[in-house]
Length: 338
Ligand SMILES: [Fe+2]
Ligand SMILES: [Fe+2]
Image (tube, rainbow, N blue to C red; front, side, top):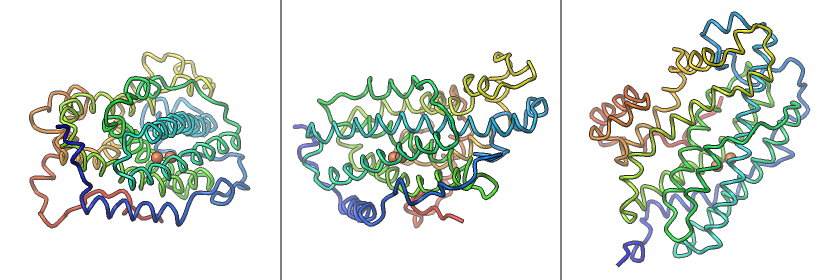
């Protein structure tokens, strides 16, 4: 018999669902009220200087100060646009799951998905409003995002894989946005867009992480597949966030070195500064992969091939030192804001 048919939710997960549902009912992001929409836009930096892709490379010195600032505007704008595309896809897909009835045996889960979708719809509107505010027009649609739902949106089975891919994107995107924008040195509006988003995303991510913990044993094929697909997917997402030819051409750098993409792209992708930021983004995610068995000493080759060898080793060694009393590590909802 299908193990899902006998599945009941654990008390720990039921408690979390209650907490999440209450939190979403209590405070919801408002399109009108939660951001400083009257902030001036002139000369604004939308992300931290040290997080623009050319920082720490020879290209930084070849760019004028205004070009560096514009890079902060278009790199952030392109990230906002990626959020819009992704959040539209995810709310459409999750509502389809709810309507199809795949999760109807778990009404508290369905209740939270309703909050989740409503929150994503508002987030996409906020990102769109912020793009208009800074006069940033849309970018081409990232193909890897489109494929995630068109390839994995099967309605006939329990949607654990699609939930997993969704939290991977949300978690990576959130860690990246908070690294880039949670700073007093940048536009107040850009910072508020990141921080207000994070408050609701933290709940989405914890829900997704716990959906996997809860259902991993009743979807037997999930783990083997996750062990193969996770590392290449994260590599492509991380690199997409820093290497957009469209962004470079919009800035319109004067120096012709910026038009030689064959040299420019690998330089920014492999800079020491970028590696440092990527490791910070990856660290809590890698610990989760070790915890659920997606990263093991046995599948190290796939992590190594995708450039995550050191991150994987650090996460594995964290668990050899961790004491039993530290239970819920890296809970995204515990993050404090300045
Ligand atoms: Fe969101
Ligand atoms: Fe989300």
